[in-house]
Image (cartoon, rainbow over all chains, first blue to last red; front, side):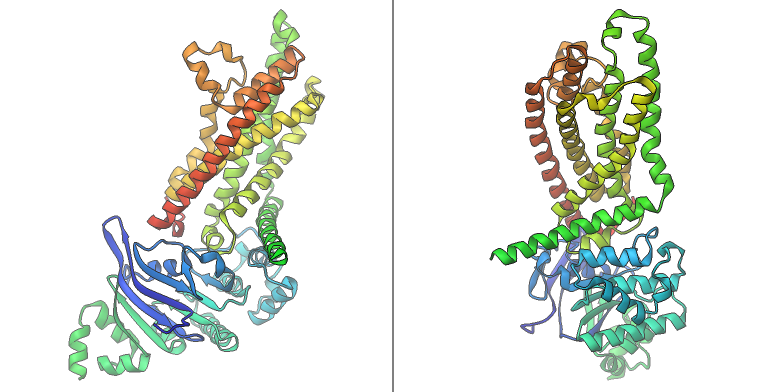
Length: 252
Length: 273
């Protein structure tokens, strides 16, 4: 493992009762990179991300974020992390500004008013700030969730399907903002997605999970070469359907 | 060291105020929630007030004991609404699917608990204070005439309500919305045992020691001593305080244990059943 990885996972195992959700995975992310965590349903993506966030105690193994062991030392680093997931929402009855104020205070953000105004401009939320979050469209809500995820200018950002249920135009817009944030802030991003176009565009590394194990781990270009495929979607299908080995052999 | 400590305390206070602000925004934006705070205490007070009015005019003892029912109703509401205010504020995070955001934020469990305690007092005040004035207007019963005794009653009842609220929130955290009903109903177990409307002596002898294990019993006995015998019993309040300290510690310990268990089984990521 590199000594200063913002996220380092070592031999992580998580067993729910008798079912292993994650089965001994290890990886470390380089600072300032965007990495995708790919896998079908039940592959262990959400459990891995939840372990990195400190929401789950591993059965065995170790997870460290910015040098702090999770979940034991999470309060040392939670103010430098944030996340977005379609399974979690910001309160719908509050206005966008109220939500960002609450989360800004929770993350102890300095000059909060200015930060909200800045995010309003960056994420095209200026006209929505005083509207109730529940009255916004799906695309607008996603931008609000993204603003919440960026409120503390995190060094580590975890994204679980950040463009799920968005139209292609909005999804592309969100990807552009994420790309820019990562570049400007030199932030480390771990992204779980089923959208291969998104992964190809954003990520310099792809970790492929299957039944709780790492099936493959490389750059998108090298994965395409290794499997002899022209799109990541085809690689994903090879791995998900258990044809990965054959595809690799055929390509060689 | 001192500067770092001060900065940590300031950050902590800011996070607590953030949670209070979140619930204040919610209450402000929702008139049905505000109405709900005041509706049931009013119905209770009016119903029991008229019952007492009727009995007082037909029985010698109750003529002397005027106010025990209304006093009991108002104090019971502090206990019940205090716990409900705590638990409902917690449930609001589940209803809005916001718990993941809260748990992933730097907010510590003790800060979350303190914020919910303060919010429960705000919710209780919004609901109960107007009702106390209605009691004066309708029945000439002035709860504030209890003076300092009211402070002792209030503090003890709130401690009990928080202890129960903290524990129930832990159960919901660990078991999901399947445990939601407990938030609404758990206090009613205490109603017969804490002798809200009758003296402890009314209970069967074997049940009386159980009643004396519960802090609110001391408050309701104390209230009757004050209304009927015109005597304030600090000994009862002190006993209640000791029991409350134990109950509160047990509630907080239970919450932390359930939170640890929730991290182990992965229920912090779920907000359904």
